[in-house]
Image (cartoon, rainbow, N blue to C red; front, side, top):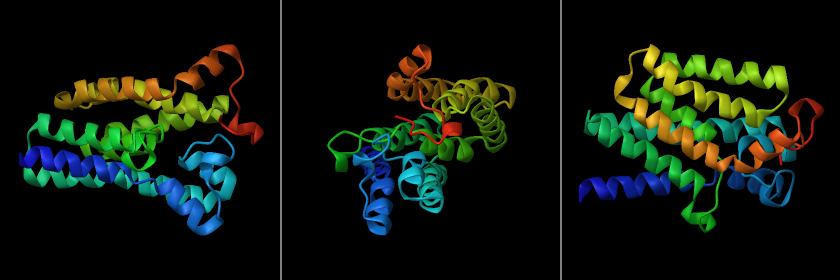
Length: 198
């Protein structure tokens, strides 16, 4: 029962729409009505400004990081930790405050991964940034991050969470379905062109 309550709280915490809260509070803008209509840091940065997008990015990362660090104080069980991670990310992707809608979960995933395997995550972030720099596509960099995570967790001996990284990879790919179609068709917007990642 305690575990169910904890996971429910993690889901609610993950559901907090920081992108909307910051954009509406400081810019009087609803990111769901502008740009890509996504509530994530990329769209907030483009519709409100870099510093607000950065604030959303940090908060969404902490949304994944803090529950995992707290969960470790309760239990060292990889199953418990993995369920905590999935609850938080699911909350971000399918927020109870947004009637089941939400973000794509990449920043929150980074927070989770940083708490689980800092070194592997730093390498994954490096791969993500390299892909964005070379291609101009934030979505492709995000997909590269979650795709590289299982391999990097394996190489850094974080064996207990490899299955978790694979499940999260599937969740992030699912949320990027439209981006993937646009990438394949050549219609995806490039950050380099200062267009909106639709």
